[in-house]
Length: 221
Ligand code: HEC
View 1: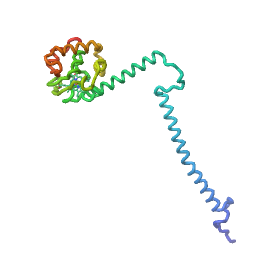
View 2 (view 1 turned 180 degrees about the horizontal axis):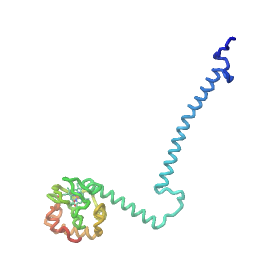
View 3 (view 1 turned 135 degrees about the vertical axis):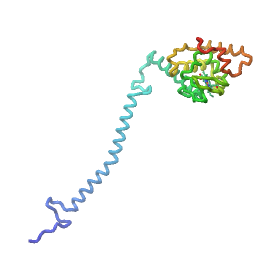
View 4 (view 1 turned 60 degrees about the vertical axis):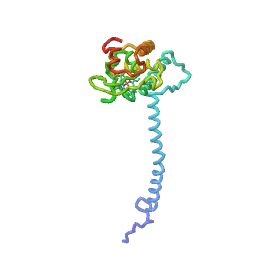
């Protein structure tokens, strides 16, 4: 009995020649390869869509599906307050934060802290320091400093309203919040300016000694 050899073009038991099988598999692979890129792009699109939905859900950033809706008075007021708070924070970071740091912690040995400093217990003292600066040795929260704070109001062109905002920001931020200091006002800026005028050299920076004579620590503001 001669065995019928299973040559390349001989059909196998299943009735397919090898070439037919190869061709079929080859084209299947091509189809699979052809699908890979669209599928990958589809995955990216899904991820993108999910990310977009989540961000919209978490914070629509003022975007509304119903733009015709009028904001209520309370919402407008809340937005104004939020905007003012952000402005004051930026004002603080720009005019004080470079030295006293954005978190008010200062830099040991160079810039004294504002967070927790008892030098803040008198609002007019802080205003006065902001107006003419200070130099020479000073102890803040048990640490010694001997440096110079420039005339911040002049350097950064602060209006009296800005001085009020920034001093209030410092006195109500971080751990200072627990001390519940009263808000300073434009009248406090005027009073601080008047007190400066009474010094022999109104524009000279304060020394720690002189400013504490004018505004003693621990006295109410
Ligand atoms: C260029 C750096 C610099 C900037 C900006 C600056 N300060 Fe100061 N500040 C100092 C230094 C330095 C001292 C300590 C001066 C000394 O050694 O006599 C000081 C001291 C103080 C003190 C008294 C000590 C303390 O830590 O409580 C207060 C209050 C103060 N600064 C508030 C402010 C406020 C408010 C602003 C922004 C409106 C401001 N400073 C911006 C450098 C700066």
